[in-house]
Length: 92
Picture 1 (cartoon, rainbow, N blue to C red):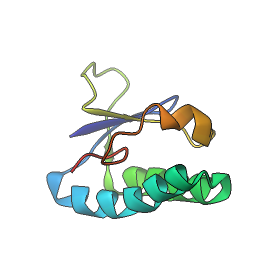
Picture 2: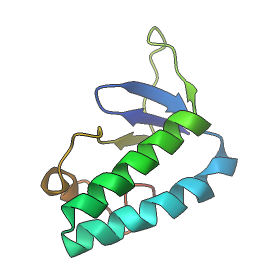
Picture 3: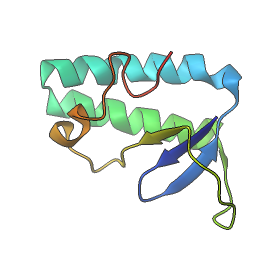
Picture 4: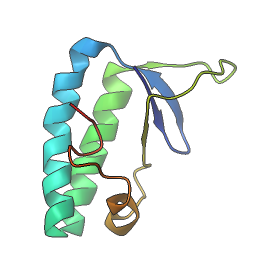
């Protein structure tokens, strides 16, 4: 799966890591539903850090569509609410 972090780049994520990313997505979803900006920022940062850690950067010269687009770390809860699916940012 190719995940894009807005303003940063793309990462190739092996399917075996999706459960871990979903674990990190759950608190992000809960914080968004509760309107808790601080918890949301913490959860988003943790999710993005894990994508960077588990993923392999896709070279900038490679043009490939992203399967999933994640907001950057500076994105506010209000801005992300429109992106959230019933399952959070990471479906599954």
